[in-house]
Image (cartoon, rainbow, N blue to C red):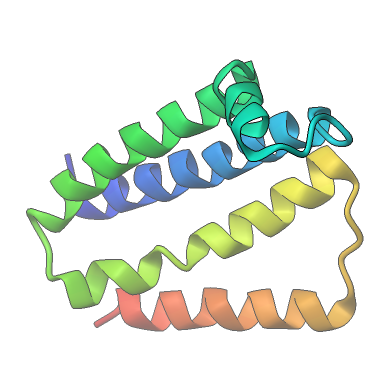
Length: 118
């Protein structure tokens, strides 16, 4: 499998894991504030567990990617995760997206495109 595709799959899995964990964390809002009980709630929360599993799979895909390419090429592409998480946050959580934030995300995308051409 091409290394660029592996990088993109890893980034998508990681961003999806973030969204899943946020879904789980939001459902726990206002529950017990004791650290041990929070930990139990995290471990028994399906979206959080799915998010952690996606993170784990993402890590293995990432390892397969960096086995084939320079880390200095691959790692900046992980910044696309910020863009994906921001877009998914608007979609799933109806979070606002200011023009300034959109500009910042666009700069990230341009940077990744420039790096991918090197």
